Image (tube, rainbow, N blue to C red; front, side, top):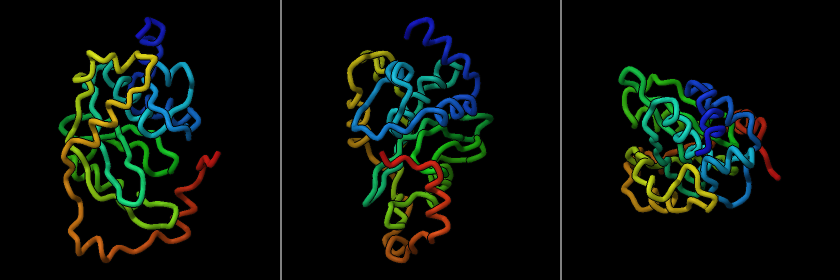
Length: 196
């Protein structure tokens, strides 16, 4: 990371500051995997790119660069940067949906944190789609691949997330009995949704 890039990340100061920065970026609808440096340069991020960017920014302000993966069925997964304050988990995320972004550090476990996304995690048919979550992944494991600064796509992180075990959130009986999201919730979650 260049010294100016590091200064820009340090200026975000807190997890909430990182979230504000991500919220100001247009949502990237392209099929890309930009590094945090490229997110800074291009001023856009997808869910994957935003989660990884947030982990890099968290690292710069003193947290470990942790992410976890929320795995869905009939929908896309969601990659979230996670952090711990006084023994409680919080999250920073980029999403095209209103409620799939920041979480205050008030969750006692990763399961609690994952479940905080459940009710507002749905596809455009209104089906509730969140099913599993991964263990935390420390992105320092990819330092030798220069994940924070490379000009090349960082698909290797997404591929790793697909390979690791995930923990189920629901029983099969729960899955069978899920209701669809009502129109009001659907409209509320689509505020600011980018289509093109």
